[in-house]
Amino acid sequence: MFSSQKIKIDKDLYERAKAYAAAKKYPSVDDFIARLIERELNTEVQEDDPEVVKRLQGLGYIE
Image (cartoon, rainbow, N blue to C red; front, side, top):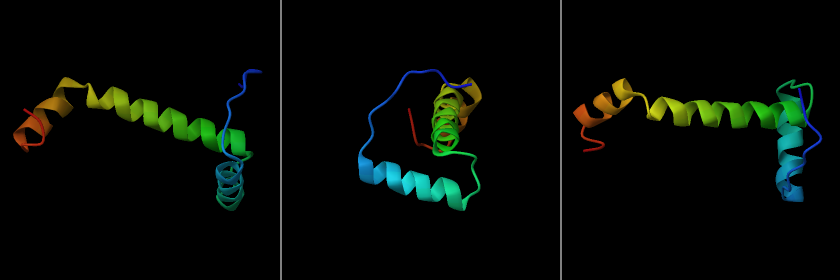
């Protein structure tokens, strides 16, 4: 599932993510971070959905 590519992350942020991942029973901090990225990317895709745009326009959030 994971490649050998690495990303840089602040040590304190990594430690917080590691503690949270353990508390929420993720198998690893890598799994937790991958899930966050997937969720964020899916959110971005949904924002481009014409139905979502129409609803946001109807609510007055966008023109």
